Length: 56
Image 1 (spheres, rainbow, N blue to C red):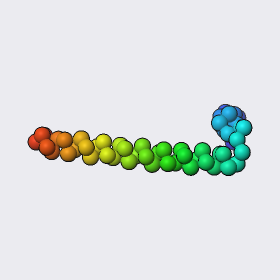
Image 2: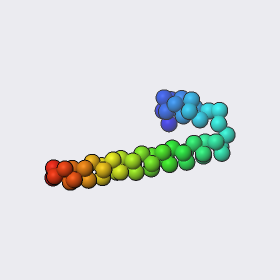
Image 3: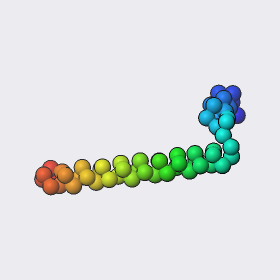
């Protein structure tokens, strides 16, 4: 592991307990999943809007 990687990891997780770090990881995964769902919904909304306006 490189020193910059270690220092970045230590800065992010240094003061956490194992269960806190686990919870943070879970929240980050959930956040990524929700962002993906939002992006897909926005894309679908834009496509439906184009279809409704006849811009296909």
